[in-house]
Amino acid sequence: MRILITGGNGYVGRHLVDLLHGEHQLCAVDRLRYGGWRFAEDIRRTIRLEAIDIRDAAAVERVMTSYAPDVVIHLAAIHYIPECEAKPALAVSTNVDGTLNLLTACPEGARFVFASSGAVYRPEDHPHSELHSELSPSDIYGLTKLHGEHYVRQIAAGRGLQAIIVRLFNVIGPGETNPHLLPEIVAQLKAGRSTIELGNLESKRDYISVRDAAAGFRAVALGGQLTAGETCVVNLGTSSAYSVIEVIEKLRRISGQDFGIRQSRGRVRRVDRPFLAADTQQMARLFGWSPSYTIDDTLAELWSAPDLDEVLVARYR
Image (tube, rainbow, N blue to C red):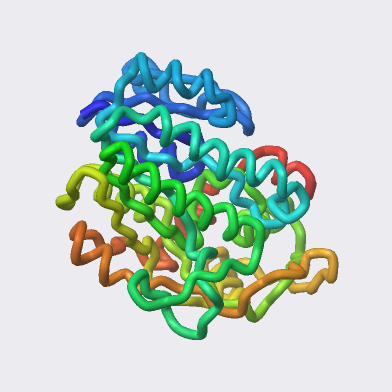
């Protein structure tokens, strides 16, 4: 299979490339926003690397035409919610216009896997179902992802694509490039802080290992039965939700460090739903996927080998 992965140098993308490397021909497309290519030399030698911005329609068309992928896995996005709120035009141009560029350039009949988000759902106090939960985003990021979903459905039907919308929940583990909750906590502790500053403490989230997330995208890219023009939707999470306080206590036990917590008003999000978790029955039924790692497994790996962006760690030193 010829597989093109946007955001291939990113958080989930690198783990996905590792999984698929050696099995299929790969093309990693990335804007390189966080530095150079981060693959081992043996991988770099055997995959195609394209440093382009998906907002550049001509560049996207060039790569799609020359590579002619059987599968496109579209992970690239502006997904850090505070950045989306502060720069909505950037979020829309990347998450919506960039997605349109890929869809219209994608070879007819190919499989198109779109990384959407649990942020498209209306807030509820139980795990969200693809079949029954209402769609009503509460932030800019969720709006851009829902708009992207609409374009995926429409263009897949017109171009005969096999489309899969993957609503991804909160990814944790080594290699994060954005200052989400866990990278922020670990960065502060690794920098020697004895008191960590946080925002919302009670909100509950479904935390999925980055390794499980990559395995989920591999499953939907290669498995299941879809017809041309069809779009299916699956959640990618664990169905379990933990509060910030619960995660902190787990990390305190795993790290063996005693530290204080200070809630900073500047870190409290204006928009922050109290609960977000996935019902994953559809994913298991259609693609035979289920998570392999517990939150404790992933927190232990994150603490021992965080692989965080140096800029994030340096600002706390």
